Image 1 (cartoon, rainbow, N blue to C red):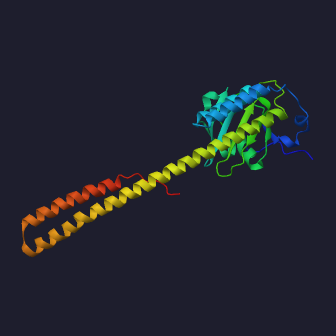
Image 2 (cartoon, rainbow, N blue to C red):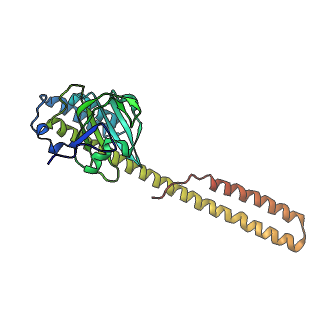
Image 3 (cartoon, rainbow, N blue to C red):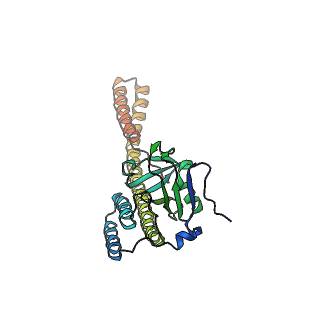
Amino acid sequence: MQPDRTHPVLPGVDIHNAADDVGFASRTIRARNIQAERNAYLRIAHMFTSPTDELLQELVNLSISLCGAESAGISLLEGENFRWIATGGRFAPLRDSMLPETAAPCSICLKRNTPQIFSVGHAYYDFLEITGPTFTNGLLIPWHTPEIPGTLWVIPYKNSPGFDNEDLRLLESLADMASLYVRMRDQQQRLHDRDLLANRALLANHLAHQINNPLQSLTNALYLASQQNSDSYLVMALAELQRLSSLIEQLLKLPQVDPS
């Protein structure tokens, strides 16, 4: 039985499971540079000590240099679109491009949840509205974090035989690092938002107590004015009303944070 290789939404794109490709499993394209890989892992480990999004770009750069790729990138699924959060090679200028989920090979890779070999047989990329390279035997690597799905992808040079199992092993390690960083970043943002929410709740509580004082004074002044028909109490009530208005304005200026 032939593997499912095409996708009706992506004309000209051939995509199938790497594990089903007998030729890929037996292919050896290049000798491994163990020292270069070791140095790369050390560099990434160092970047994890103070991680920024440049760590993702470094993972893309290493995918290109260690696997002899023409281009590479990392795609994150955000809502119904993929964002190319890091790109290198010919696709470097397209960093932060957004692709509809239905028009991205990455969506097929994530649904199958296993590395894919993919090829593009026409030069016009409908999903990007650009002219790009045709190629065969590119690789798509999913990462296994359902709450923040994404893929690492590499594209070979034209007329290149593509990649082999050792490349796949290396790329899976780099994809795991990308997934770890994205999870760390998401968790840090959640903690940051919760801290902001807690601080704003404290400020709101403080302002609420402050609002209670002019409200009480306003109530007393209006009561006395009604009993004694005195303008001085009305002036006092107006001052307290202005103070109350200022406090409410401060409350309204507090940014809203999603508590989830």
